[in-house]
Length: 249
Length: 254
Image 1 (cartoon, rainbow over the protein chains, first blue to last red):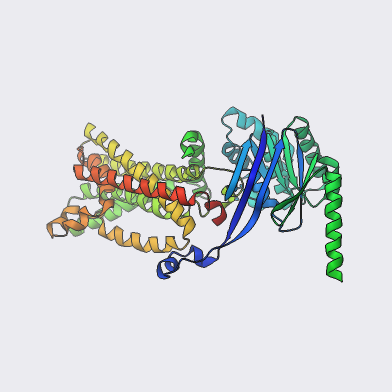
Image 2 (cartoon, chains in turn cyan, purple):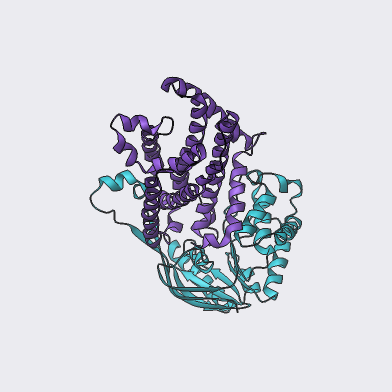
């Protein structure tokens, strides 16, 4: 049974400057530096069940990415509990998790290894990713030579090839062209259809209304609302518009 | 420490790490062998002339000593960068820190083996008798590898917390290089009354437990093994404390 449960999950992100990382300064100063924290995720409790497609919305800096990183098991909560059942595959910014000096094929292998695949299964999956990404001869070039569109194709291909039980996507489609967007959509849908959990953050609200079964609205790190996408998106838009009118006045 | 559960993973990563180092050279890892050989032959000839000792003894001594010193340095300096420079992975997926550490330590162990083999083969070529006793390097080698792993673990957390550490380390290690009997025999210092500097230097043991069996076919002075075990226990304890305090914070630092 796959699923994610958060109970009062809170993430305090330390805001530390260069002096925090200086051994010399830590030795020389007598008082411990006061570390300020930003509460990126504030007391969030939620349960995501098998087959749910969750859309995460919120203003810039509201904590969408931080919450996604908690859901993907990357950020340990400062307080609260996080339970993740299922194999997670996450796609945040495009180049993370890639070694720039390695070529496409080597990067695919590397990621698959890190995700726990071994032996012959890897070779089979590598072929699938190559087919999906359609990068031609570029697949044998170091990834530092890639355009952002190529990165999207490769990263997305890697993240989805192993049919993850929980797929976490952070604003992923920005750089792809129309043909790739179509392909990616089909891929995500097939994952959804096989009962896996898909969690996306997006500013493309119409996409969320159309594709998701649930929408979560994050505001200043808190879970502001959760429910049917159409309702939540409407509420969100109304607030955003109101805020903008306030600004204009 | 769940990195140990994925042995094939860090071996693969380690091999890739080695490969990526030699990516832009046609000779590849052979460079490493040539480098080690050239250094030990030239340095061995010069130092044996200075000390007036047998060059056939000095070339392998310096070759093996230098290989072990390279391992020590890498555990400290490369170690301090392991987590600090792995933000790319740490922020993208939930990956255990020990996997990243083992990858680097494994690669350094491969270098260490190559370096020691070069020194040993040089000694055979130069006509030193081979002996089954050389295999007595194995327990020492195991202890050195373990000490290296603990060192790299401790340094990786310190390095993630304190970014200016590697500069200071470089300077400190340079002093230690001079103070450790690597390119000169320990007896010289001991005879002149600086024995304490040898016995209190933990890195002397790292050198001895591998070099003495390889060259003389006997175990090193037992005190060296004790010293290494103590080192491992202390470093392991520090690592354990660091993991408790810092491991959940690293992802926010890198």
